[in-house]
Image (cartoon, rainbow, N blue to C red; front, side, top):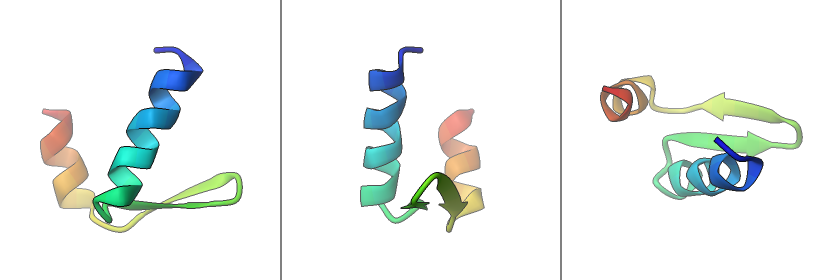
Length: 39
């Protein structure tokens, strides 16, 4: 995936509250939902 695609996905997931972008780190808030999304 391109960097742009990954950034859009991360922003979407952050908007849903599944994770938080903290500087150069990604903090996962909802492991279960992210796991279900990946299946």
